[in-house]
Image (cartoon, rainbow, N blue to C red; front, side):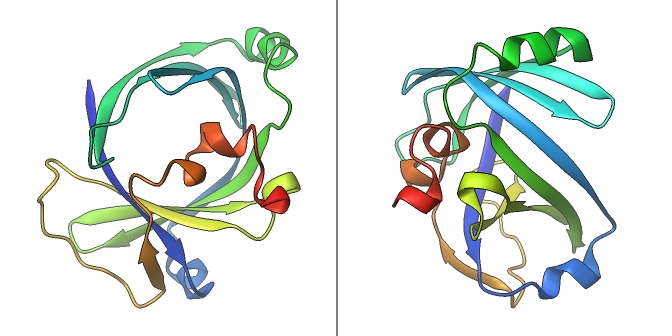
Length: 155
């Protein structure tokens, strides 16, 4: 499946009052090669193994494959992952016909807040709420796979 998304830094926490839900995520990477990344993720009582391909030149789209796995398998795989796991609370904010996923990072990435919006195609028009800051789509240092190697606190 092809994923199309845009990423933005967030300049305030005003989005929290607009959130319809939120949940904690812990994830880490078995592989972070630029042509492919392999992620293990736990969300509450569910877990997934995800493979993502190389991003398009503009950074808006890439192949994504995801399958559910058991929590036990995920916990065991996390032991094999790269040094810095990603810990974050994700807020789901509906804006017009779309929804933003806003990640408030914890641990070694504390202080970083990133909003993502999934689109049907790269040029799709969407509403930009006032709490969005600069766009960072395609900037590799903001990829979760990059943050698992060089966390925000080490920039």
